[in-house]
Image (tube, rainbow, N blue to C red; front, side):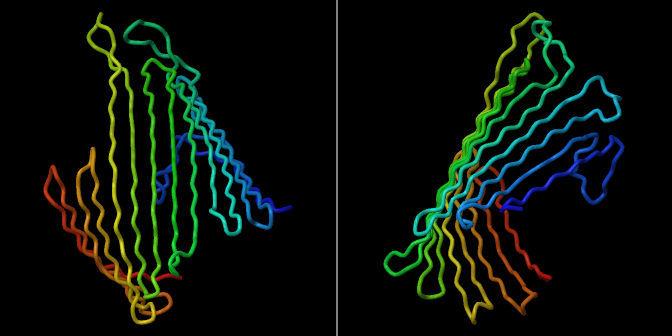
Length: 280
């Protein structure tokens, strides 16, 4: 109604609930979810909002209850002849109503008390250069978690991605990309009785390059694909991928790929795959 797409749900899954087809579903949880997607300016802008509230201990069988609050908001703008822009923000909150003792000082702390703030920015631009269609994109994602318990399990995450795609007059498409991932995890560890606790810091950082090409043949029935992905930092490896996709008919496809992964600290990997896909 009025360019709004509104949806909502109430859910209740008890502690003994079991889904053999969806093992990922959280059990012992109850709450509601509501979202709205608004189309504006002749579908040139989209605003999305969602909110979720839930809690566990549905049968009052635990010592206490943990409440969860999640919110997400995003705005996407697609102006004519200009780059598209996307902005996003979200937060996750988890608070328990029961306490535990700090092993280091015998002080009381909540079992869970944390907030996570997430920010996102992305842009993409289609344009012509030297008579060739180009697409340049950039995205930035930042997440920070603050832990108010004595565990002090703070986290900070930064992810940056850039890519440039070129579509040639011959049936060839090439992509060059770069990504950076920076992660820091804090955790307060406790020593023997009478000794002070220590906050340990663990970092996991890496960067990756991407060189990929796709060539179409026989009226797009065959697509030859090749890529090279070197990764540096906490992960050191080089991934070579080559293969082809054959479209047998409108709904039937056959894929064949060879993947060689050169690892720096362990044995190399070689993977061959033959996949038949039926889409309906």
